[in-house]
Length: 583
Image 1 (tube, rainbow, N blue to C red):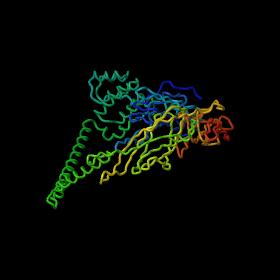
Image 2 (image 1 turned 90 degrees about the vertical axis):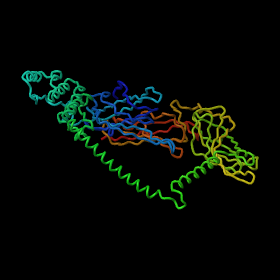
Image 3 (image 1 turned 90 degrees about the horizontal axis):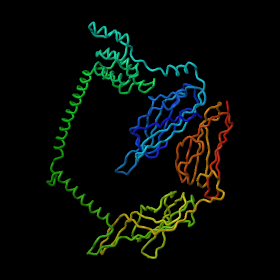
Image 4 (image 1 turned 135 degrees about the vertical axis):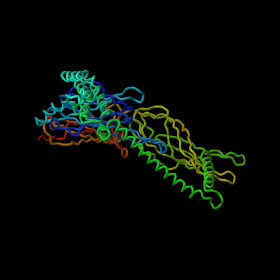
């Protein structure tokens, strides 16, 4: 592997977010010297990427090994929608940067691990490091390699010096002009304010490395005489110095705006005024059409109703009645009691209790909270949620299941029972209390009247003693990383098995676990996580690994130690050792 080239963190200006992850990869890992590769860098996590501009990478890699085209960078953002029906918003969850990169010499080259800096939600600086990437660069055509090493690094040249001023000059001015052309410098042409003099000043400024001065002159020339091919050439040369990149290109707006930029300021102002007048005329015509349609609408709709009332008065009456009915309905929904003849009705009484099943518990083993809710038979409850007083290490492992109703000592009541499957991933011993909430609805009678109700409820269940025992220390392997699972499977697949010596093989590890994986855990030697998902309680994760086939007959072997819930023993799952064929 190449030495680490983290000279300084690359700042992701404008990025603010929580904990980000990153991964880096090429579209191919075996190529010829000089072949263009596509480098992709993904930033994953919830963050504000809207102000991110692709950072320059060329200064952070070895120019002997890599040629990075910073100006080829492109960006793409993946989002997801969060929030409720009335207040949802799009949140960026990933930002992808792509660059064009070329390997510059033969051999196994390692694109370095790059460190990026961004601002955390607390305002503090955070860093994230992308993985390094191997590429086997094979011998390319000598002509191509020579062009890459020489011509590709040659900066664009500014326009040639104008030997003729292009305007009438006096004898003294003409002498000064000839003198400046004989010993050209940016300062020597300052005294000539006409276009040829300013062009020569900009050319000399570029040759002297003063790209800001040159761009300022070209902007003035564009405004005064309009864009020309010579001015575009000068801007391109100045931008190449600015970005230290021979492949610098003109900004997109300059290319798209050529039809307008070719005119001097008078022509531009005239075109813009013409467009403004055209838009104004369009809006004037549109306004007259809207007023005409409004008049027709007034004639059609402001016709008295058959009962002598206007249509707007009738609509106002209907809206008022609808509003009153809504208020009455909301009052019924928001209360569980009301008064009839001065007698106030009692609210529905709900009792809650919780127990664990089974009673003896261990870290990583699934169990259930059995929730019992006692309510009158006339009431119906739903949308039930349970909130334990301690959530650290507690994971819900499945859907809540309805159990058969229990029997109450009160014949007018019923006991609704539910099973919530959970798991503790850390030891815990102490009392655990619960807050139970949901919706209750039904009908109540008051004298000769009955009414419907529906309202939310919240009750506390009595605390229970919980003892989550740690995993057994007897027989625990030294390389045990805390994985607890009901069986575990891991496999590998290769992008190719037939390779040449030093070719890079991409290995994908696929792991399936029904249980607990410590946060941030990954197999030894992997470069980055590809993705993960969960279905029917099984978590599936894939990782990418790069393996340089340097003569080894098999891929590296990988073992994962875990605690098996069923057998209550420590086990090992293995993969790797796939045979490699050398051509």
